[in-house]
Image 1 (tube, rainbow, N blue to C red):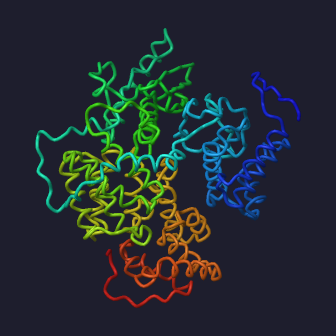
Image 2 (cartoon, rainbow, N blue to C red):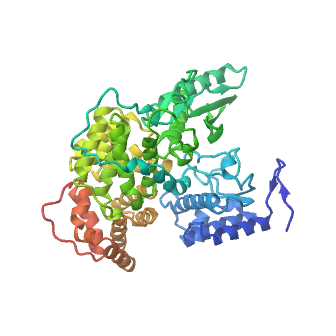
Length: 601
């Protein structure tokens, strides 16, 4: 084998043979989850790079060589290459976490382009010793622009998503004893008392340390102070965490912070760089780190501070953010509060990330007990409302033992959550969804608008609000919000993609609609298969449509008997319903005539 080569900075780089051997190892592994075209994509970009043609790796050339697109391909209107690149990034991350954690060669596809990166792993056999790095929250750049410089962090990047699969079982087992209690009836709300256990002890506590600046530079000192204050302000919009202000002296360990958010600011002429990191105080581990660059000649300083602070807050504190990853539980458990209730919240997000039907009942029962123990915690009531609502909107997917009157229970829990904290965006999100599926669309949109106004950084709120706006017929505004959720939100996997499929379908772009639909969660969700079936019918792809019909008749026969009702449950306007049903008719599905159920049901 060839000897390792050194780069300009003196670091050794893998040889061509080593890289090819590593790619073969990845592709042959059962833990590399990628379709055939994704594998072709990876092989193509690697071989082009090794052959010295990395400069030609643009969306246009990849679309022609890998996806058989013709010369009229437009990357702005057809996101096939960008979407597939994202899938392969996630597949590589999973492989290195599960099967390849001891591999010596690390292959990544940095955001901002399609040229792969190759390097030697450091301490790959001990992933817990690595700095856990989250994906950058900066938007992915146009691949035709120069790729950004790589972040200065270890080459093995164990990111947020991959920990869910490992931690699901542990999270559920950890609360088994918590479930052996009678179920709580939400129709008879428990009385609140001043002696109820405080919810603060069950929430991640983050101390924001004053951001540091380069000594002697007054301008960077002012920027550092402004960024510190802005980050505190943006983080406090998330009710799921407790923010401890800078220079605050924590009390006992039980009341003190779990994490410290640190940052440093460097200013050179008109260029600013912020480096931020989140430290787990229990053992000093760096849980997350990232850097942000800005040119102050092009953007106002206040605008830059706000934008950077929003990105940091979203990465750390949104429902699927750093503070809610299962590996966070390595922190020393607090002596006060209710740790099991927080474990229920972690389990909820793990369940929701994949919408795993096997977890639904256990998580629902755990949250029921959580609100019994902590009746003043608005967020736990909101999560309980959302999981009850899943029994309505995902009934064909979950196939779980349904609660009696789940929609009523969801509405009751959502109202309780909002009563407890009218400024809790998660509570308003729950009220929005419960109202929407109760056919009170006006109330749903009011709640959604209020939630979004309180915390636009919460991508779960923004995405769900966008979904409701689109289903109400406000497609332009709603689809823009859904698109933003996909670009910033790590979960739930495959959920917002079906919203983008409907957006494309309603504007008549069946090619983009099919692409988005196939990116949606098709493993379990029959409603997503129904969307794909309508798109295939409208596209005249009848052979593929028959295959989807066969799947639906086998896996969701009741849905096929109630298509008009289920479509009306989601699409508010009659014209949108009929447009969707026309696609189903074109695919060969017999749709019964209207029976007065048109309208939001």
